[in-house]
Length: 378
Picture: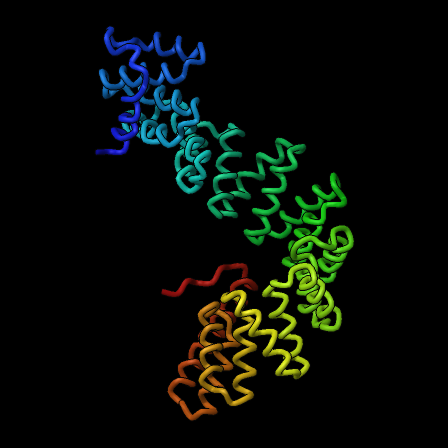
C-alpha cells in the first residue's frame, strides 16, 4: 500500500457523518473548518478526495485539517499526494515543510521549505523555518545564510540570534558568531554561555588571549557551568601556559569527576613534565570514560613506546589515527616506532602518508595565499 493510501486509511475510524448521505461538498468541509470541527472536516475532505482522486486541492485541504489536529504523521503523505498531483498548488510545500519540522524531521523539511521560499523569496516565516531546519539537520553554513536575513528583520528575537550565532560558530564563520554573541551580551552581560561561545569564536579567529578573558568572565559569573573550567584550561593549554591550565582542569573535575577530556589534558600536561606513570594513570581513566578522545590515545602510545610496550603502543597510536587520519603526529610516531622495531615496510607506509599530508597542507597554504582554492584530489 502506498504511503498516501496508508495515510488516508486512518480516516476509516472517523465519525462517518456523511456515510449515509450524499458526498459532502468543499463548501461543507470549509464550513466545518470555520466552526473548528477539524476531525469532521477531515472526514469530509477524505470523502471528497475518495470521490475525486485527482483533486490536488482536496488532498491539500485534508492535510491541513489533519495538521490542525496535530496529526502531522498522517498529514505528511496526504500533502505529498497533493504535491504529486499539482506541484504548483500554493501553500502546500510550506504546510508539508512545517509538518516535517514539527515532527523533528529536519532533513525532510528542507526540500519543501526550499521550494516554498523559491515561490515566495520575501517570506520571512519560510526563511526562518528553513534556517531552523538546516540547523536541526546540522547543515550549519546553510542555517547561518537563511537565519542571518531573518535575524536582521527581528532584532529583538534573542532566541533567533542565539541559533544564528551557534550556526555561525559551528560553520566556523567566527566573525559572524562573534558579532551575534556581542549583541546577546549587550542585552545580558551576565550570560556565562554567551561569554563561553564568544570565547570560542575569538579563539577561532586566532585571538586566543581575548578568548581566555571571555572564559575567565564566564567562570567568575557561573563557576559551576559545565565545561567552563575545561574551556579555560584548554585555552591555557593551547597557549602552553600549563601551570594555569592544570588548576582549571582540576576545577572542572571537582565539578564533574567524570569529565574525560579534563583527565586527558591533565594526563598530557603530566607527560610534558615527564611524569609518565601519573600521566598514564590519568589517560587510562580518560579512555575508560570515553573512547573518542584522540589526545589520550596519542599520549598513551607515546608513553607505552617509551616503556617498550610496543604492541600496546601500536594499538593506541592506530586508534589515534582512526579518530583523525588527517593529523600527521600519529603517523609520525607510528613510523618511528615501526622503524625502531625493524619493521621497515610498515614504517615507510606511515612516512608516505605523512608526506601526503604535508604536501596537501602546502597546497592549501599556497591556494590561500593566491586567493584560490586547492584542487580536489580523486
